[in-house]
Length: 534
Image 1 (cartoon, rainbow, N blue to C red):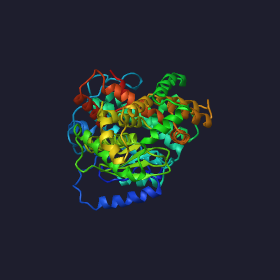
Image 2: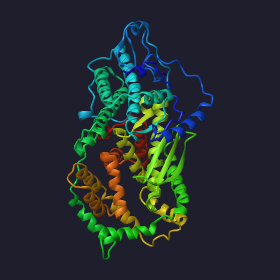
Image 3: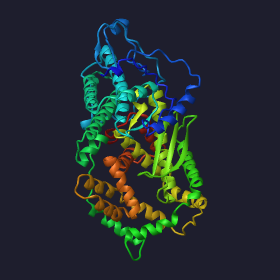
Image 4: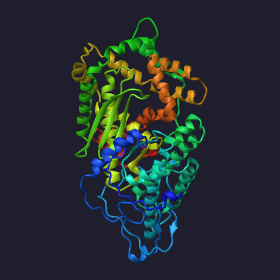
């Protein structure tokens, strides 16, 4: 490690200190973050328990006898090497007790090896200590990667000392690649000694996140992977894509819903434009939509007492909406107004960016894993990681979860359309069309794969997006611009939603069980492979 890391960095996981959103390492965002941090630091805080030698507040495993503890060397999180001469193993302060994991263990390539025999308490303690140290090193490494790529860090609300250290003297990309591989090797070496199922799932999560970090660093250095391999390495899933011709039958069905002369995309755009929210009505419509998303979610999921969000309307983005989680149960939700916003986007974005989507997911990770278990790794969220497939999949699925069956059209017709001063339709064709168009979303992935793999050029990608997603030229340009910026990230929406839906609705559960399974995904170290396990 470089000299800049030779001072011990105290890891006090006080997650209420909000440090950043997506642009954590950009000067403009950092200034606003510093203002918020100063306000937070002005509040008195309760004393923290003494930090252990691995500098983590993680909940301890069962205490060892003094004799056993003396045989376990301390671990320096800066080097992750055994330090000789240690005589006692400090035990971290206890975190609130949480229930055991309830998602199934992963199978196949993502599975971890079973313990070889009866657990050795000393080995298990050392393994847990190593995981804590790797978690801290992972946070540092992630923040350093964020200095090399704007937007790599989607959220960070951990200790200010880690962010300050990362931005002060970050390692170069080659050194960071080497570090990710060393951390993966450390995890592989101690995993067989972990006997607690939740610790084993935690380790599997860390390993997958590190592999994604290695991949993204390699891409920053110029390596290009085929679309499917890139997606698998970054997000934990190898997409199986359909040929574009397989969507022709769905286009024919939509043609019957919007008959008339001219191109189908032009007809669809003209029809949907009737349901555009006037700019001066956006605030009222979105306030009402998010309030209803929250109300339906709060009926099933307990919210932190002081949770909140700020809603902002912005321009100049390749996306339509974004959640910038700030920590302390607070988010900034932004809606892009570059293009006219249709009524259907109000509930879509209210659920996806808010409840039970990104805002709720991040709050539950902070509440249950960062504060509840003291797991440092969940205080940072790298965008290009398997965590994003879970985030986008639950956020997309959350729309139907919060508004099943007729509740969505009823809410839009009776509540949102009057607020938008849109005359409600006399039939259900508007909702039938929106549902029919959702079945075309897989075409976006096929177009992205062909474009990023070099099979088609950009103008062709735009033209195919117009044809198969029924977009105007402007919306098609925005869609391809998203692919330009985020590449294989596009798989996380549709494929993630399908995987989350498959896990939650397996066996035809009732509504209470459906929400319970959603809460499990949100509050546990979940990987895409967990959703496929039997």
